[in-house]
Image 1 (cartoon, rainbow, N blue to C red):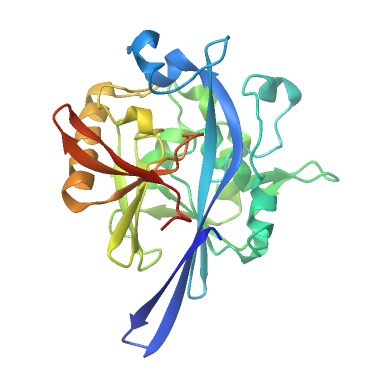
Image 2 (cartoon, rainbow, N blue to C red; image 1 turned 180 degrees about the vertical axis):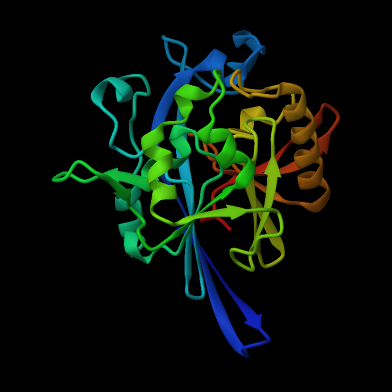
Length: 297
């Protein structure tokens, strides 16, 4: 069983709302270890995260499905499958349940999704939102009834891509969302669900959304690319493609101190080996306290 149950009293309507939280891995992909850990030497980062003989690290693309009342909310959607063979030859997809298949395994159809939170519009986070019709060849939304949430800052950033990130922002992943009329702008004051608080960070890419999800007395941080893996907890371990490294450094320190002081849980979207962790202060600094899965909660 991979979901959490809790009952939250809705005083205005005098009813009980059942919340279910599902986690599943859409797919794994492989990425160069130097890209994942930037200036940190392989001799050091390889103690924390393995790589193969080609220096490739196998990484997950996890999503969270939140069912709360009449809402079914999905956070990020992976690569999708509409790109050509040459494109996928560079990312080495392997394992995982698949997006539609993972939802089906939890009794949910794409048309039932009410909201998609896109942390940012890099290909591995938003590609699954848009599919290519096999007959017409036209692009359309997989989640046709869902509002698709992205920060306005990031949307403007994605449709006017800078030279460094341009390859990560694909027109076919982005414009069909706008053209569908289902694009919604999220701010830190936007209420998508009573259990979700949105925060926005700029170090990895301008306007990235990081959802904080409330479950009873716990808060789960969907880390996205702020902390791709447990191995990125040391704040100096940053990916080479973070656009603003010094901003990222400050943001990581803020998040990790917040998580430590408030006993928040970190949810790692890209760690193929560890899904969640709590933190503790040690003689050598902030380290993981326990590692576990959403199902363990």
